[in-house]
Length: 276
Length: 130
Image (tube, rainbow over all chains, first blue to last red; front, side, top):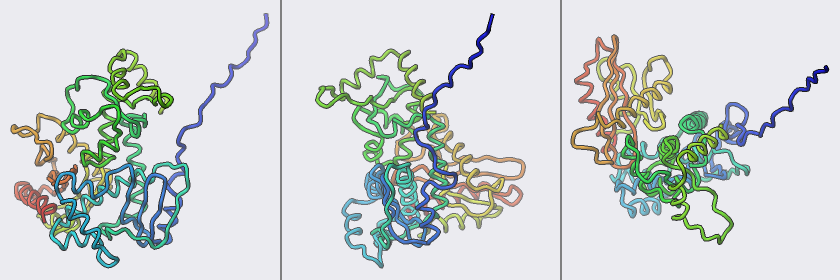
């Protein structure tokens, strides 16, 4: 009797969805601009970094609440005070200086809030993108310098933050999709911040919307969202069907509620495995 | 009005101070560091201190009896002592949403924990109120 010893075919391997660039940098262009001590704005798909002599002085992203939102949402600054400072800012006196000299804000408070907003926006601005970045030389932000951050420090922090989120829950879809609650009642053991977040999840809002509404940093909101996803309380809403199929968010939310808990667990497990 | 660096340098003038940092406890990012850090790596120290601060801030057992009001940190300080040093974490109460604390590392023989706790509280307040 002959034994046919044919090796089984190799299992197919999907390419990793977001292959990390070569070790070290998140953006080779940014690294080069830092080395050249460039001044200007690096415009990327998900945000803009402002550089002054090779250091990052400000960052903005459409996915994060700006410094203005963080400072006005809880009443630290009145909106008109902010607008006034931005309108009066010129090359010599940035809006930040005007706010400080006008006595509207303590220096420590401004530095703290600004650094928070800078790292927050940079996390999204330096996310893997599908289009190349553009650099516009000599552009300065109206805010003016507060506390500049070295490019290498910023890049290291962005990589650390990616890893932090991945460790909490490896599926990145809840970061950008509209979110639904998967249980009608909040589980015990949630923090007050998570509870506030959970109450606002309604099948239409994304993490960015929630961060802006609550005046919280978007990355901090992602940390809470991923923790809620890991606990099985929140899931990304499934991609909507073809336009005009009449599925309302309320329906999507309801269908998420009525799903068999075993099935949701298996789905979450599958998503987590796929995201690994 | 002091900025972050001035605040940390002031903390370093306390007797027995070895190192000070301002850390965000959600992300584990050090927004500023001065002096030494245990093990020599300020980033690792910041991440580990952030983990401790987060546990203290998030567990109801450590919150004040008045109950949380949502905007303010539920905990004032976290104190850790070992055979040769003290670690003092002081939560910073800001009028905007944030999650930061001051971390002071004190030499046990020269440090005065009671004094440091009072002073660090005052520094945390001055940092954000001017």
